[in-house]
Image 1: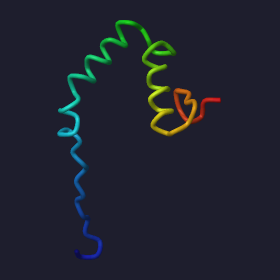
Image 2 (image 1 turned 60 degrees about the horizontal axis):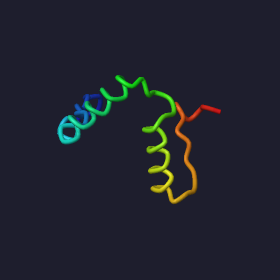
Image 3 (image 1 turned 180 degrees about the horizontal axis):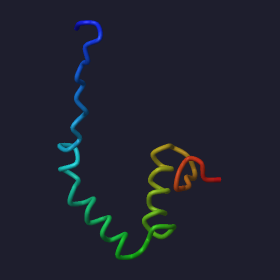
Image 4 (image 1 turned 45 degrees about the horizontal axis):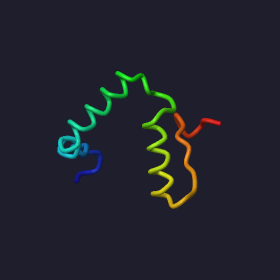
Length: 69
């Protein structure tokens, strides 16, 4: 590469990774929207339980982002 010349670095194509779970994700999202289950509820509880088990801890709490108190 010649000094000052720009190099093209392509972005990672995530499309193939999204195809396999696409229908399941779309159905889950549609269910959440239909039930307006954005905060708390069965799905959040299931996520917290599953995530706690994955982390090998007793409890996990789902929050909107890393700055939630």
